Image 1 (cartoon, helix red, strand yellow):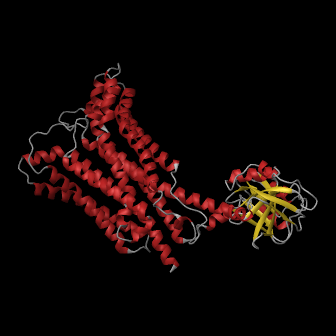
Image 2 (spheres, rainbow, N blue to C red):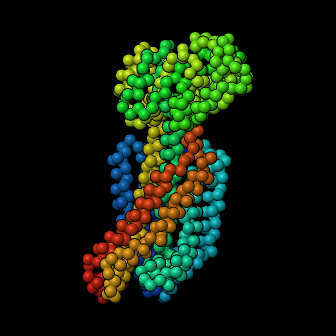
Image 3 (cartoon, rainbow, N blue to C red):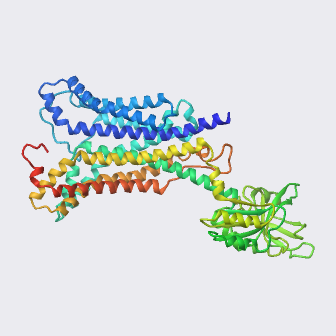
Length: 597
């Protein structure tokens, strides 16, 4: 029953990744077919003007597409079975059939819709002057309503709602937000082009003005890569936020289990003299903190709490580094106001306490006696947790006035700790001495196949989003490659140098690439902020029933900035490579008579 509950909960979260990756793949596939339809529009217009029927054109395109798509779908299905022979057959068959149907039908349907009536002449598609149709406006508003509903459902019911009737809508919430943002960006895209043209028109150089003017006078279909790239990169950013949230939760849980990077504790006797120095000598150890722990301090109501006797400076520094109940060392050194210490009361010490213990003790003084001697303490600070006693009720006091409080615990901090050397030092500490490593506790959280599989699935979704974004950039650039080559050849006959040709192509490609990258960063961050309260990651990150740590989406700078910067660099590299290749060819090759470019 526990496994079934965990499986259902994990599946509801991973559905977000599956829907995102699948939608991005569909968007890129539709973009490719739309670019093909735009490239073949003059040919199909001529066929329609000469008497070809819409059904005849659609049938011809369907046959041409099927010749490529069906073998490709069969090869992909065979490769899937080869790589994952143990997987179920019907889901993969259904997915392959859906992809094949989408690829086969997208181009014929678009062509049939665009050529319902014969056209003798069509005006140039000017991106800056184009005005969206009413149908497009209605469709975008419908998507906006769906996206708003999905986000509200996700924030209200969380990913647990995937098992109910709102599951598909909730799972599609991140990609719907990305699509809506992309559509808004596409609508706003002509505005910066118009604004940039005015100052560029008054400059002496022609390259900047020519690049922006060509970008603005292109076909509206040229913004389709912008839509695909933004959707893909936003999906990748959301997947990166999931992975970052999982890592943060596991790191926090491992830190709560150890209190530092390494924890060496002896339960029945103090540690040997100089033990903390031997730990500090181990490779990778940056700092050690020795603590005396008494787990049986009796409280006024008959319950017990753990008492930690520490050296204030070293322990306060450890609390700041770990973020576990940070406080200043002077908090423990300052004597609380009130009567001075006497022989009967022992030293009067300030204490840092956990919330429940502080509530029980109140603001008065309390006297204790035992193996450590007589002492009196008063709670002056309250903290939710502390490194020496994470997850327990505790009191922390200064050990300067308690010489009998010998260390029973050593907390070590540092990167690249040598586990074998620490284990050897621990064995030298005597019987009942135990070593706990933060890395070992961290690794224990990935034992569940369901959780580790879901994490790998999200990693695959991030990789797929980045790959599809790169594919969209390449498809968009290859679509207009021949036109740009002919442009460079014409300008070369007017005296344009090879260096100026490279600058022109890079400047022409930059507006769309930079806009997509900036939109990805902003929309990815907004999507994470909108859905952080609705996506529960505890079941992916931590064991079932572990509630000491809350796992939430966290914006990851790498998943936001790296794919965005990579798309810009890829665009620049492809444009520069095309300019270099075109410069090696003669102008006559590009401008031969009869070429439709």
